[in-house]
Amino acid sequence: MPDTSKLEKQAIEISFQKWSLTEPQISILLESGQATEAAYAIVDIYNSLNTLFEDSLQADSWIHRPNQYFDGKTALEVMLKGITEIQSVQTYLKHQLYQ
Image (cartoon, rainbow, N blue to C red; front, top):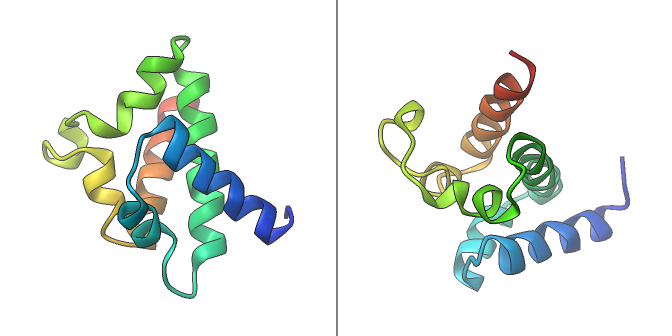
């Protein structure tokens, strides 16, 4: 597994620069004793989205769009509920990649 601090910095960079999240949102995503797991999932979600969508703007905006799989909520709304939900978004995207 990559260096924790490097991984967390990469997750913050993605969250801030690519997904246009606020500092409070980023703090919520990376809070708790599971920041490393959350950072890994965020980087993996970002990579999955950029594999699924050729257009980087579409990939970056995906977490902000309502999704019927998440009962009409955005992936961001789901992810802000905690590590289990972040990982559920990660798993959903993996299924989309490999179905």
